[in-house]
Image (cartoon, rainbow, N blue to C red; front, side, top):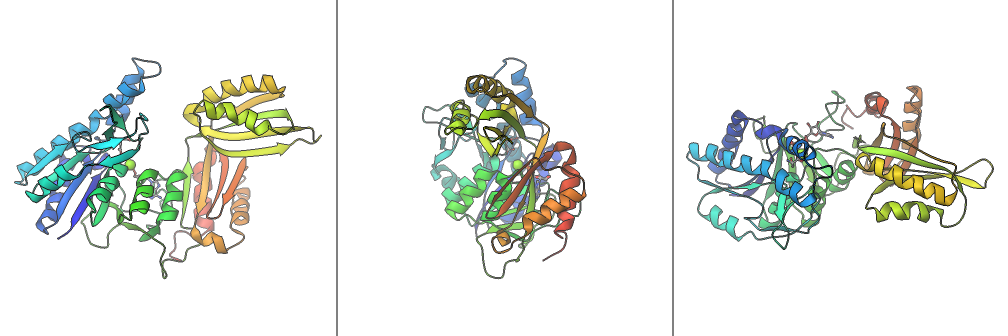
Amino acid sequence: MALIVHKYGGTSVGSPERIQNVAEKVIQFRERGDDVVVVVSAMSGETNRLIALASQLQDKPDPREMDVLISTGEQVTIALLCMALKQRGQDARSYTGTQVHIRTDSAHGKARILEIDEAKMRADLQLGRVVVVAGFQGADEEGNITTLGRGGSDTTAVALAAALKADECQIYTDVDGVYTTDPRVVPEARKLDRITFEEMLELASLGSKVLQIRSVEFAGKYNVPLRVLSSFEEYSDSAGTLITYEEDGMEDALISGIAFNRDEAKLTIAGVPDQPGVAARILGPVGDANIEVDMIVQNISPDGSTTDFTFTVHRNDYTKTLELLSGIAYELGAREVNGDEKIVKISLVGVGMRSHAGIASTMFKTLASEGINIRMISTSEIKVSVVVDEKYLELAVRALHAAFGLEQKP
Ligand code: ADP
Ligand code: ASP
Ligand code: MG
């Protein structure tokens, strides 16, 4: 007998039929003798619908009220799933985040979980009930409802699994595991049986939305066995992709995957006098405005006295950053400010890169042979990222996937 946390995403609970399918799956585990805690997302499209509603009523929706609004989607699903379970004779109880004391900080829209009181859930499990918890939400110390950022139900599931010391956290979604890249973009993408926490963290932070990055951080920190699998396929003990610590004998791949991120925009401030402190004078006000900067490149102009400074931010922050930069450019006596929203960041990720040279040059050659211009580059021990024009996304990812032979087992 084991204690398992299941999480079902939006597509998996997108209709009454699909919720029935989830109920059947949960009951299969109860029949094996397992205790089950289920975390669900809102029905697919619901969170987007709520966000669109808000924007019709306030230009910049109030963060507190926004969380009250967008947390409602999950409350619908928990109740419906409990009804489906009861209809099948399985006792179940639904709870909102507040009701199981998922306490977070007060950062509306991107709150972090600080504490969970698992006593109530344990009492229900003791009575043979299935516990169904709303994902994506919690409450701060004052009882204000908070949400955990898009895709946050993954993090709720892992946090509950950590608090309950569950035997496994199973993330059920609309693909049957973690692939070498998004299978919607590259149909030849290959499912991975295992991937290390480190690689999964990197993929998630570079744009692979199959798991929210915080859920992977949590699982690594609290050593929660984590598996991604399909809600539409029969369960087997070896199904899906296991996220684990690095072990001897694991697939010795150079590259484990390709991630991409369409959510960034690029800005350049050109012809800035090349003096100490320039970077701080540009990025200081950007940071003060709570805008996160990702890639940064600084170039010396041909005459050596000025510099061009380019960086990327989230697309949602593009207009605000452009406005800020115009002010900074005037103060610094820079020549001009320009920006581009239609860019995408593509990254190769693999722990095998540590011991192999030449990955970056193969990447650049592959893109060159497709006539794709690289706008920015950044590297770390286990990844290489490039920024290219958005229109090349599919072409670039497919070409790189083929160039590194990712469709074949290493
Ligand atoms: P859910 O609603 O279940 O949380 P998501 O849409 O958040 O599902 O995540 C699943 C989606 O992630 C898949 O449909 C797939 O298109 C996308 N995805 C992106 N990168 C990958 C990858 N490397 N492996 C698998 N799926 C990926
Ligand atoms: N419903 C939320 C979202 O769409 C949380 C989640 O699905 O994980 O982002
Ligand atoms: Mg998701």
